[in-house]
Image (tube, rainbow, N blue to C red):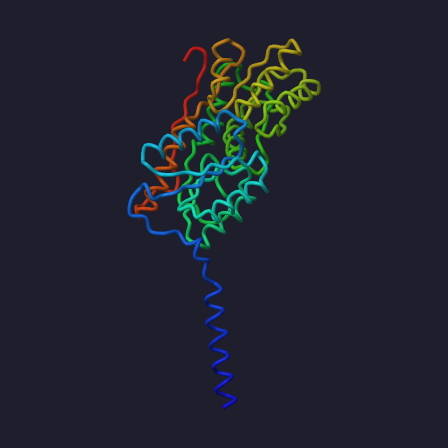
Length: 306
């Protein structure tokens, strides 16, 4: 009798354990028969940057065109806040997540949380270091960095002295744009200084002021985004120097600065297209279709002449 009771107890504990491993009912994504039943969650690294505002607008426009729903949250460049935001989106029962990571390593835990309950993840502009991502929708950042280096060489010649303003440490865009730039610049340019300015215009101004004091012979600057480039231009103008500045993104302020002759060039992305393609990828995954792991949005070097 005791053996029978022990066996029953063991079986009960086993069943309870198995049940506890299942995600709660609210977290299980339902099978959607029509697009108007689909709810997406979009987590943006920061809406204090025109590039990511355009990316968000591209998502909203495509969601509206398809008759879907989206919840948008702003991480405000805080990786811990972004993880919490994504967990909240999961709690709200989204069917798929669109994530533009602040930090590619830090966001991995949130991606893995979504993986554990079967919510597909699509990343935009930047990747996640760990966890399953159905698709990364982004420009070819490595190629863009190479384009910037080639342009500086074309205009100033080999071994020109340059500075590099890097983005947020840990962001895949920072790594890849820097990698592309150094693929060319390490052999054909003289990189006298590089420092992170976190994709921020105000930090770009401050960092550039410091770099100019320590490196008075800089002839060109490559900034990993337009916001830092525009900050660098303010510092350069205050110094009275003439230094070529190349940015990355192609936002409206940068294009206006190029037209006005204040900024030399930008490697222009299409953030609204990135947003659209991300929504389309999430839709395809939810409908059981195969999507490419890397979905590229074209780049273009924009100068005053073209």
